[in-house]
Length: 298
Image 1 (cartoon, rainbow, N blue to C red):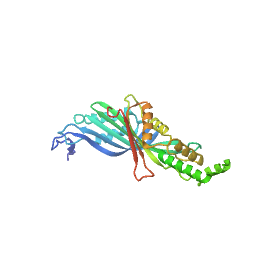
Image 2 (cartoon, rainbow, N blue to C red):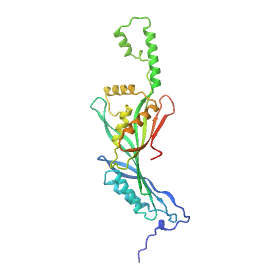
Image 3 (cartoon, rainbow, N blue to C red):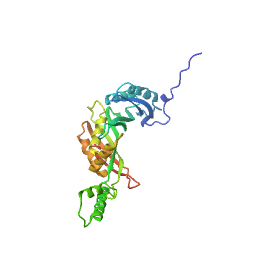
Image 4 (cartoon, rainbow, N blue to C red):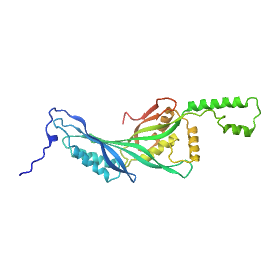
């Protein structure tokens, strides 16, 4: 009995001739290598279907090409080779290829004062496109931080001043008494509100970069904000964190301006779009601000 040739339905002509912008798969599980770490990731992979007469693409060829990511450190060059394999395996069908990788970068971060350290995750997406022979790479990084409201801080200080007047009006002041008052709950009658916040960085890379400087971008953002969230802490670290918040009071507008200046100084970028989200503890809604540089022209 002769073996039958398996049918290739995707190679059949389409019943309705029409090119398609993107065809592929989303949420493909795979490992990626970065900075010596083997990270769990999900990938979205696809190509354009420019031959409107073709019924479909060969998705298994895209899937098999992703095996390249298992064995080499993640770099722009590697992503370009993967995208080129997408197109080579769809010669005559596709001219544009797209790959997006979602993962969590795991970094060990030191405490502010004590010798403690702990692990923190940073959600990262890397999006690469090979379109009309032009290669583009874009990063998206979420950086958590703390934000303390300047308005709330001013109102709190005013209440403390009023309490001081109420407690010490028309009295001679004794240093020890005032010092004790400042350290009591009676003296510090109000505290400003703060909240965990997120900086969402979308960064377009220069073509000459041969690696992904994710850690450098994260460090630049955290240094600009001054209030990165902590991992393992002792009381001395918690006090230093309170001091950092008091010295870095910021509205969402302040935060995004700080990031704008920092990213402009970061080498390797030709455009960025920044978005900060302050998950308000005062309100039931978020405060949001955005800023961009060279984004439309990129």
